[in-house]
Length: 210
Image 1 (cartoon, helix red, strand yellow):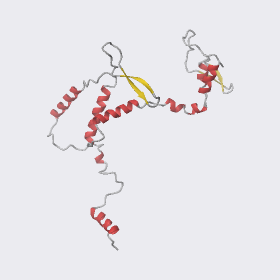
Image 2 (cartoon, one colour; image 1 turned 45 degrees about the vertical axis):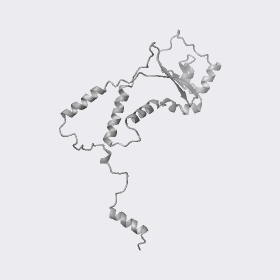
Image 3 (cartoon, helix red, strand yellow; image 1 turned 90 degrees about the vertical axis):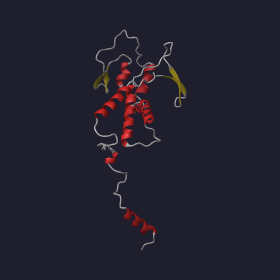
Image 4 (cartoon, one colour; image 1 turned 30 degrees about the horizontal axis):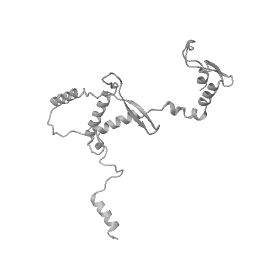
């Protein structure tokens, strides 16, 4: 972190490790002299305060976590969108759940880069949202309504595929390679005994057999 402490005071090369090595900033060309932002004065109260924060051992040890931090808001929104197509209170076949999830993915990807909605006066639209963590109100942009313009093409592709298919609508559909029903019928880790064995085992435990 020496580069940051030195860069802010317009020093882009410095002696490192007690003068044994020389450190330098990653940028190739020196910053222009006519830049808008002023440099900090070396060893000024502001510079010393910045140095105490950046060189803090606890901060440095956790820096990797800060660098790899990602907000999960978009992922949570996507999961909520899946629930609109496949609610948790209902059960689905593997094929049905897969199709519903694919519809949710199409919905998400098609509307991912929607622009912010505007009023009739041409002003950007916002809504107020309260944060329990910060205990403050924030403005949140309102996006344009979804168009679902891909639906007609999707329906046309379904009808076209059906027209080209052979057989009847009620013909059995073979299981896909990744269908969980190809793996096991249940979650048991041992082979299911026969019903006769289960009855005999139950009788021997509670029937008083010798």
